[in-house]
Image 1 (cartoon, one colour):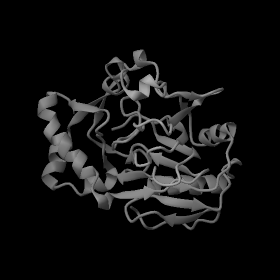
Image 2 (image 1 turned 120 degrees about the vertical axis):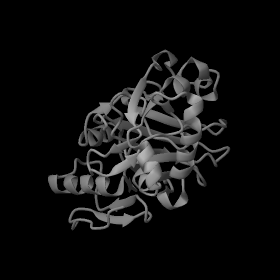
Image 3 (image 1 turned 180 degrees about the vertical axis):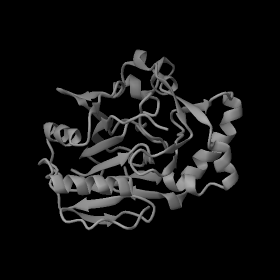
Length: 286
């Protein structure tokens, strides 16, 4: 993580770990940030890869307005939307449900031809204990690879797909049976992306594969690809690349899908967790 932070005047920054992440205070997200505050928020987002906020009392329209300050909204195809607000996907686990959504290391929407820039997750109801989210820096994951592995990955591309995660093959899962997911017929996305990307904001190189959606390397079989992919998945989850965020009601996390993985802990049996997520459009990766 870059440490030469700009001289922030509108916001206050508390780094979450040495690897990535920062808690931002001094800003009220229910009101559109002024030009200076927005510039500082964008700098913090670029610098820390995931930014966190607490005690933000937002209505759904206010969350949508906030998201539009950052870019166009990508309406999720599969998550149950909030009634009246299709831009907001609900990420829900009821007290009676065993499976959570997002309980593996992944990055959102990598199966799209133009993957999502970021995801803005707002806590409506959280368990008293548990339910944290972990984040990992794909900058650090790439930088810590051996030179030989970097060279091997430089020109590789990988296929990402939504079919196995949201398609008809998984409609017998708890997520589909209880209505948290829908539209398996729309799980038709396949996208080819570089395994190592140059981040469009920072120019830094980042590892860009993830266990949820990456299927295989281009020109390789699944069987040939899997051992190296498994190695990269284990490498990317190393503790020194990560930070952990404990949710409270009215907290928000906004992460960069090009520079991070995230992992939603499923350690709160018998408790309810309701989150509102908005995903933002990105740009083509190279």
